[in-house]
Figure 1 (cartoon, helix red, strand yellow):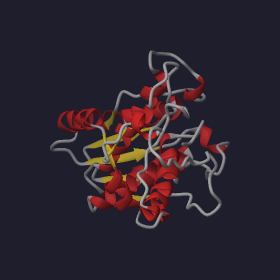
Figure 2 (figure 1 turned 135 degrees about the vertical axis):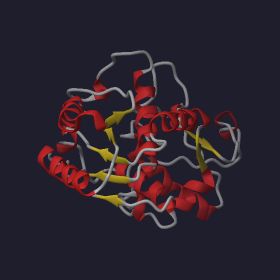
Figure 3 (figure 1 turned 30 degrees about the vertical axis):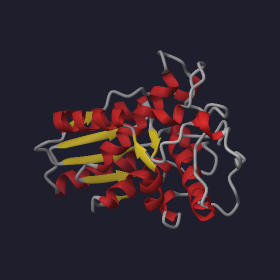
Length: 250
């Protein structure tokens, strides 16, 4: 459990670290975000994690607490845990062994790819917003000037036909659209002027935030080339891209 936790991919890194422990113990890992809610839980209690990722062991939460032996983690980040997914020994295999992305998420990804990626050479961009400047244990985000110069150089030396952008910042979103015009495509995600997690502009807002960034991350893993800053989101994308033998650039 990780309550209240942090962003979706920070939570995922936390989970994969614990998957490694469960694997060594021969224990069956289950994430409980019903009794221990996180940022993506709505007021109506539910196991929000299952909206995004399924446990391959097919054990339901209701069964867990009827078991003879139950180990419950703390929410704290253990000092010995790697801070990024790529640093977790055997992390990719642990993800594949225990977790699978929900069919609903994958269907939305595939529909978007069919409509927007097919027969295109796509440059992917993940551009974190200003909240990363104050987020705990995060490096500073890329500046607009750095991002613009990097993308401009790539466009001059490659024949990209589309630029798929992912950002939670409306300011960064408008900047990229203005800078690169008709080449820009995007998923219809919520974007904020400040911090999306302290806002409540729509039904199931928090649940949708998790779904949207997961979909964007998978889409970025399918682009021909990927530009990013250093974040938990980009760490997950790079792992997916490694599996597809695609190149990434920080």
